[in-house]
Image (cartoon, rainbow, N blue to C red; front, top):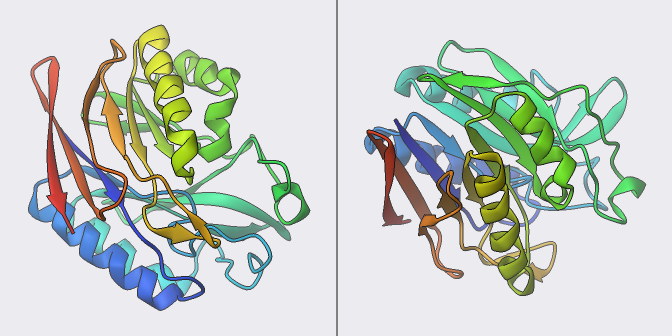
Length: 245
């Protein structure tokens, strides 16, 4: 199994440019035989609050057709984020594109202070993904601030916890400590994808990484460069590879 974390730098308010970046990252992941590629929180729109409604996607949005095609063509699972409008409410969500051309949605369960003005949260969209005898669940950003989220993942027999985040540089040490502890305490591997550059007018911390189930950091990207972190399972162990974008 090969997992990939895409460390992207979104263009503000430019959905088409961000989608084009996604296509290139997905093709690069597929070229390196990845079975799954994880993008950061709200990767398609960039992290936004005030403009979230204008940037929102529907579950079957036609603008996602190319990503759907890439998932099928390359036999790869793609997890990419956007504001998602469902049942007349707006959520911070992640689309899960499968090689069988199905698309599902995960919604952020715990919002940062201030996000509730623009978004709703929900526990109703929290599927378990199955990939090569592994059980995978998703977390979006502030979800990882709540230990109960990781505890619930363990109850669902999660073996790989996928954290899609937007964290600033000064918060990355805490993110690393938290995710390492979740990996060790719940005996599950953790893959994290974060932005680099800027989003919402803020500097972003990068440092996308992977922790094995003992809590050890296997590999990570630096704070400043866009790139792809590839993690390959070799027997019971994992090894990392970095590719600049």
